[in-house]
Length: 254
Image (cartoon, rainbow, N blue to C red):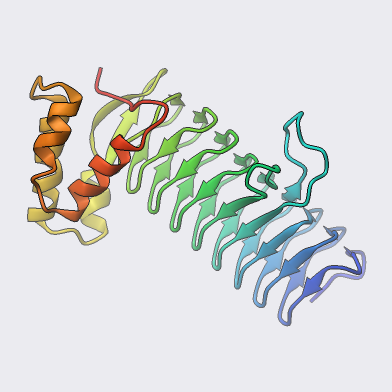
């Protein structure tokens, strides 16, 4: 059902079984796929929203990036199937650098969260209330970011990690880790999250051993990485590859 007060731009593509609430605006170059519902007073433009998404009231998707260098170059937001955006979520489209902001499948953005231009968010990511991702932030699959977290531009939040409430993140957080504080420091591994995703005790133990080698062995980081390269675990390889590709350095224990 499309409410009669909703405004639909002539360039928008609205598939069957889409619901649009009162006074919402579907602007130019928007694609809304089947099964998606949009609440009242939302503004959706320059985006492609997947199947069966739930977009609440007062949501903004596809507005211009908050970047002074942006000069109306064409860009979009892509949102994967099954994602939920709660009240007052804002997701800006990309800049000319990448041309896109990408949110994965089955994500849950709670009230007043923000994803800035050129962010890449993986699948099954949960972001709690009033958390902001600055431009070019990358978030791996299955990450959980608590409320009131601020993530600096170009930082990466690793796969399966958990970021505690109120963190200020200025460096990369390795996969499967937990962190807290201002500025963020590591506080161990997200063991509960790993168990919930069905990882075996042996796989979790491999990650524990990698954590000890990296942060508790007193080895230099490069020596610790060289030692871990002998490990054949794909999860350990994810961690070592993540560290080796870091451009902002990594968060460490206090």
